[in-house]
Image 1 (cartoon, one colour):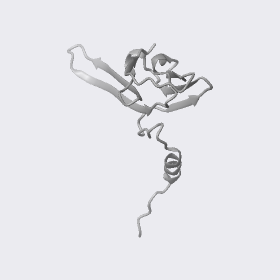
Image 2 (image 1 turned 60 degrees about the vertical axis):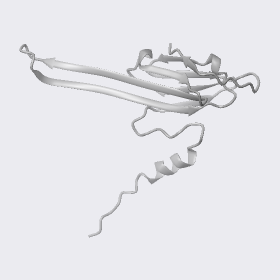
Image 3 (image 1 turned 45 degrees about the vertical axis):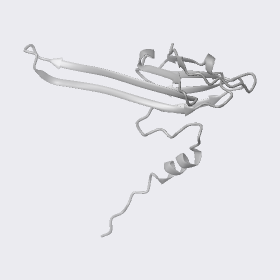
Image 4 (image 1 turned 180 degrees about the horizontal axis):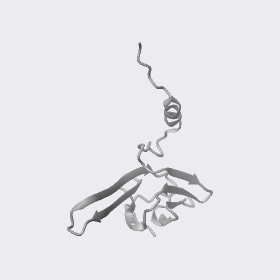
Length: 142
């Protein structure tokens, strides 16, 4: 009997390869879902982040003109007896970083980020003209 390979995953791979571009690198399988929306006056990057707070995120523009979104969440649940021997102890740790190359028309001085209803939204306003600001800037998550 010959082994049979499962080729059910070829279709998602084909679509990922076709739609992958230089503006946003492919995310790994454990990374949260990301939406990128373009409006007339801005771009909006949305990151699925259920259970996360603004303190779990760090958002900044690096020296290479990339938007870097980092998330780190640690939690610990304990169930103990009176004599303090562990019957059950669970650790949870999540870490994520996504780097997106910013288009040239983004006003890097006015980028805003906020977390609401389990979604991190990063608003990237467009410059009125083709100006370029190449300064490194940390963005406060609200």
